[in-house]
Image (cartoon, rainbow over all chains, first blue to last red):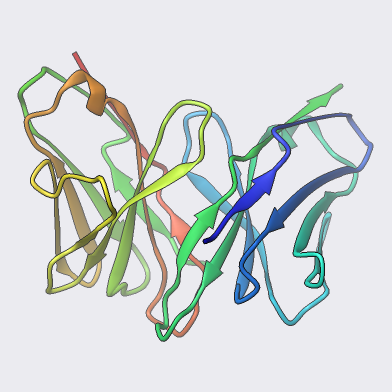
Length: 114
Length: 116
């Protein structure tokens, strides 16, 4: 079955880098996603990576994918207090369909201290 | 970018009444939309997959008669919580993706339902 694991909490100081880690189990995952959720809000798509890629960088965000270990990470450079939120890792699996369902981790609560 | 709008943002209703939540894709067409439920400090649980012009597909354990889904057009899906009870209080979020192949899912801002 599909199982996505994340650590639940991460605290960093403002200006430092944050690294949020995620592991998944289904090797047929096609896309892996990072979503951000602020209190009382829905999910904001931050970035995603194809499973045939190793790395993707988008401004302060760097996603690293290790397919062999089924490990995904999100690095946020120069973390700001506004980055405090819950970050969800998700995998999607396409099986004969153009639209796959998402399987979510439990989310990592990132707290940024000034 | 792709925008998903959800309405209302929050609703308080009395036990026994029904509540309708709307999910709209504002700048794209979505044949399929997904409805999730999120409990406090927990991950998202997929409730059902909404298919335009056909019946929704419900996940195991989700009562289809309680959570009625109607996907009447390519830009609108509705979730109606019928005969709501306090245990139905939760955060409901919809998501959709453009009908292009393998587009990423975008989420609405969620609806906080409180049943008193």
